[in-house]
Image (cartoon, rainbow, N blue to C red; front, top):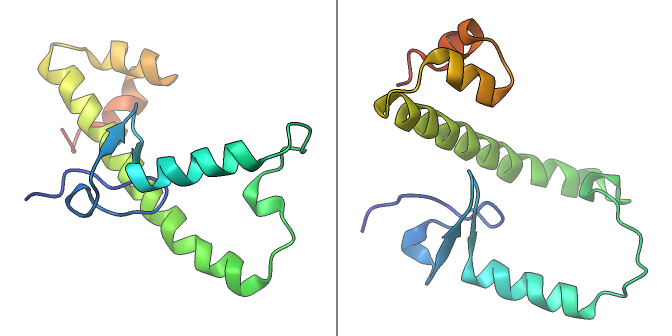
Length: 116
């Protein structure tokens, strides 16, 4: 089986999970969905929302998180390039692609021109 994508949360490839659900540039596996459901069901409704990096964590845990975050960033960049490639295949101009990405035509071409 070919690796097509990885879970954006646990980084497991589609070949190691039962189900991988895709969204615009992100994926979540069945195991992470189950974990999310259990967290949501057990969470008090008045709990404050804070970003994961704002938690009081030891340096070792913060450093450990850098690798999967970097891997997720790489996956998102690859997915974005693939979507830009699809837009080009369908006749999308660099102007339209740049507009969709909130950048100029020239910036879109410079960023993705060699990848598509």
